[in-house]
Length: 535
Image (cartoon, rainbow, N blue to C red; front, top):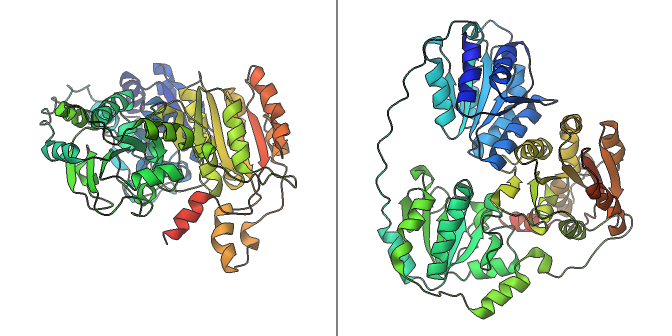
């Protein structure tokens, strides 16, 4: 067996079942080897889309994502999606054919390229191919696996014995955290991406400790849905926080971050956490502790193990009162916050649109949100059933990743309706992947919040009198564009226009539906106003 075939077989042996990419000469044989070994290959229209598909699949499924691309431009085309995955700590293996000769027109400095976006790199050698693949699969983060073109055709060395098991990690030292929990009267737990990645085990362990100590529960945006349905759940902390969530988090005397780095978005540039509150942080990565702000209590360890280790403290109601529970039920969602509906003049208020879709769509859904001024509306007005039901492509803050990420999410969970919420700018950047969406025939609803502009720039620079010609565009019939790619489509300007969505939901949903929602954008979104206050 040659190296290309060995890589494909080894990946399947490690549990890989779904692969995303664009095939060229350099990855032709390794991709076919994956398929021959039992994996399904999903061809994207562009390598950038393929990278986001693999990223979205890994996030929603909890399994390893695999991306296969051509050498040289195939890698560089995929780089933004790889950067998003790396910065999100997504477990992803990038199969990157490599022209190692500096005289080749395909040559790029692949190790440096991987390092520049925060991904790990490993070059496959014929003698160690099985160990190289095993290392990449076990890394638990984004790895660029270099496949030199001349090595791929060489005979693979023998399969090596698995490495010895790593020594068991010592039990986490939770003494200081236990003391802080015992002293707190108004604790708040904020769970982040690290907790969401542990799924139901993290939800159960952290919520059980919160019940014991009377803590309120919140999440970073990346972990939205982790505590869905819990009566003490405040939803997202930070710029997306509801007025009630901001008020209660701002009144805490102890904030415990579970797998969250408490970055500026989660803490509103530090303003959300009150002066004098004790701040504790739990993370399996010691380098994450105190990364964005000083903490009083730092615990290295798996969030599930740490929460369980703190469980012997006994019961305390904390600040959980019947009155507060009633208030959270009545005011805890953005949908509960009154607003003036600005629908009119052929445009629909994005809050009204998002709330109506929340009512209309099945509860079992996956909501994938691209970046832009619009993003808080679908992110916060549409509910999700659990943490796997929310995919937020914000680590690199690039627009244009949401559509392809949604395709990967739909492959991961075909039993759920996948909703891709995009701005018109991000939609047009990724529009070629509509052909992939039509080909996959998965249940997919694409909602374009169309303000005919790069809304974030309009609201950032417009109030200061800057010209906006470079960031505003003629209104475009995006519904017609979608039909050209083989998708169903409709234009929404008012609530009655959503009848077409109802009709589509009653059908087989084998053809994706694209909704061109002409949204009001006279004011910046609330989260954008909050972000601007931080500068």
